[in-house]
Image 1: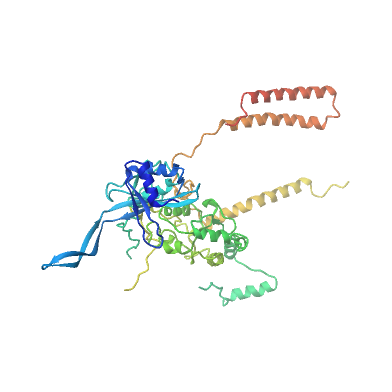
Image 2: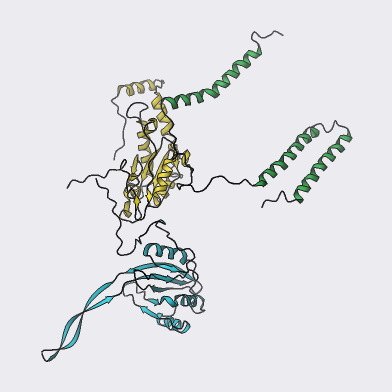
Amino acid sequence: MQTLEQIKARLEAGVPGAQIQIVPNAGPANQPSLLIDAGHALPAARLLRDDAEYRFDYASNVTGVDWPAKVTKEKIKIKRVVAGLEKEVEETVEKNSPAYLEAVYHLYSMARKEGPLVLRLRTENRADKVTLPSLTPIWRSCEFQEREVFDLFGIVFEGHPDLRRILMWDGFVDHPMRKDYVAPTQEVAA
Amino acid sequence: MGMIHESRAMPEIDQRQQLSRQGVILTTVEDLYNWGRKNSIWPLQFGLACCAIEMIAASMARFDIARFGAEVFRPSPRQADLMIVAGTVTKKMAPQVVRLYNQMPEPKYVIAMGACAISGGPFRQGYNVVNGIDRYLPVDVHIAGCPPRPEALLEGLMALQQKIAAQRLTGAGRPRHLDGAQSGEFPAPRLEEHDLAPIANPQIWRPTAVKE
Amino acid sequence: MNTPPFSPGLFLAVFAAAAAVFALAPLAMAWLWARTFSPPKPGPVKNAIYECGLESQGAGWLQFKSEYYLYGIVFLVFDVETVFLLPFAAAFKALHPAACVAMLIFILLLAEGLVWACAKGVLKWE
């Protein structure tokens, strides 16, 4: 399989206007992924499936991730003028991570026996702009899995042929896998 | 956990054994009725999750539930005596479990097989798991295990058989199916917006009080 | 030949009564048992239509396919034909040759009816 940088270059050439980033994933798995913007996800996915070099014809897994808003403090050393002398001091810098929901796709190529390629799609926020394009028209196996992501995270997939809850019952209103979900108590007052 | 053994102190049982050694068998209508019932318990074909595989194994050749008269798993609740709740009871499935129990004719029994059916098991903190089917149905035998081996299911079946053998025909302690005043149906929980309602049937399930 | 001391009708009557008792005694015992020990407890919840634990929606009445009725009629016709054919076959050797011709005409008439039914598409199951 080509490297992620090569795939990114090919996608940027083949889908004009696409904004693609490589998201590192340090750790034992070492599986960096491609972050594609939601507006160009469908043509990018079609290219990945149909291009002779890639032929990613099987989406084996679709899952969701909930990223709540986070403030990270980092200690960095910068040069500052302190009392007339230039010194290197440690300062804490705050970094605000925005809140969003993410759908992660794992793609394999059965024809070329390659993979996995990990794609990420991010929503704008966790509150009201939670739509993403559905990749079910490209890979049929996304149908049930996108229903599960909708059920548990609340991401609304536009273009999905049958978007409804799959694990929880139809009248249920919460999204249990969000970080701020609190399960109702099962204890009965004695 | 020990099995219930018949008391050998009762003189009539001793007398019966003496007579049976000489070829004379005495019994009572009660014993005959219970013997017929306990040796032909027909379970409802009702497996929910992994414990169902162990239940199926118990019905196959190696462990052979047919020895106990219980190999006829009925697909319809109308013909079944026993509901073996084998597997995790999700909240989405709970109303259907109770409705199936309601549609069984009396006498009917429930075995809660496995940790999930007893108390929710490893998924107890889950958002879609009922913490034990005994919140909604009266359970006669609990079989611990995750999953319990087929031999454990057979021991649970034998414990149920002993329970049936000890049931009386008349009197205040008679079982529910002989008492016209007690209803054999239980309300099925409703699926509400956030949870099941009610989360337990107060007539059946009382939480154990923990002394602080 | 000596006549038997009891008339054969008496034996028949005794055995018929015994047969009736064998059939009715279990039913009577079950009814008595239900009255004394085990009262029936029907109810709307218990008698609800079985649908794998779900609440049934909609009516349970289905429209019968008309093909069933047509198959029944065709069967009846050929069954009656068989009733005539069998004694004919049993007494075949003792009959006049003209009887064979008559039977052939009978079969031909019914075969023509079958051909008409086939041609009309009655026997096709859609």
